[in-house]
Each structure stands twice: as structure tokens, then as C-alpha cells.
Length: 74
Image (cartoon, rainbow, N blue to C red; front, side, top):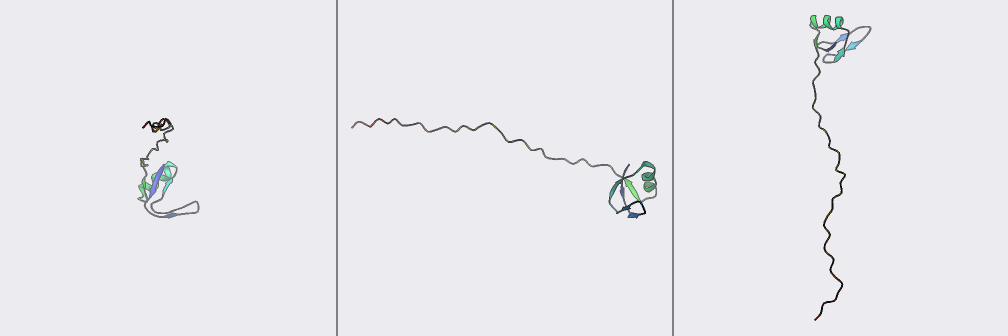
């Protein structure tokens, strides 16, 4: 069970800081919560932006019309 520590806890097996989220077996987590040392932790969903892949189609730009090579008549 995931819990968020309210106090600092240290022992031979672990050291946990206040505010740290840890995953413990159910009975140990319940003991810490009932003693007021921790609170249940519910994960927060974080919205992430999705990046659209770049467009792969080619952009066709209009070409200027070619002028004929005929000389102008006076």
C-alpha cells in the first residue's frame, strides 16, 4: 500500500523523510496511518501533452509561368 509520510522515520531496515511516498505491506502501512505518522497516498493523474508527428506531405508552390523566347516584333 502506498503511503505518504507525515513525519521522519528511521530504523535498521529503512529511513524515510517527511513528505516521501513509500510502498509498504498493508499491515505496516495501516499501523503508520493509524498512529498518525502517515496518510494514504492516492496517485494524481498528470495530464501530458501529445506531440503530433510532423506532416510528411510535400508542399507544392506554384511556379511562375515561363515567358516564350520569341523576340517582340516592332
